[in-house]
Image (cartoon, rainbow, N blue to C red):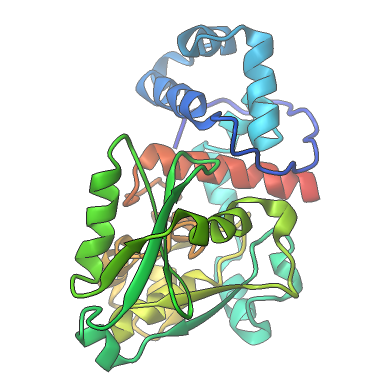
Length: 299
């Protein structure tokens, strides 16, 4: 987490529709990396703006547009103190999620999801006989790769310069499946995932979880962590009835095939420390900060 001193924050603006024609993430990523590399020096907002090639006023506009927060408020959302606040009451929150389901009132800010798991036989077949369509699309967190099965969204990853690497990552998960590029067919999924304006409880996103029984149980537990909250690996282990399996839970979290939708980015270290993320720690920080803006805007 970033070590930014606490201070007053400006009120957030309402969440805006995602504009795929505007690539704000590249500069947001650059700003986060700059701060992370120099956190002991506490660089000023003017320093950050200069590093990303913007004036201070344009940096302000960038973060307001992208996250609904001022740069200072956004960076405060990445501090260890904020992470610890996310972990408050986490056990009761996970319990409540299972009692009321994934569309309860505590999920006010979230994409609503309905899920099913493929059978053990389907998983062991490693995708044999399964036709998966895929497409690359803009997202608030850089270019995203979406993979769809006939029954719903099966994969979501991110691209860092090389589309081939992102696609190979998904192919390794289901090596016997047939992958067919269909950008037009997956565009609607991308729009629904990344545009908060479309998040409605009566129109849940359908996802398909393809993994071992243990992995699926972990991923289902992740779905119980609402936006604006977090859990630890030990919390998840206890939730699935395997309290001594925190390390195995960590491995399953790292294999989550449907990033962002299944919110593995909401899992933190026991003391609130930022831990690994398959698609990069900077992106995890960006998503956490972006979600802080969503929660603040919705009150």
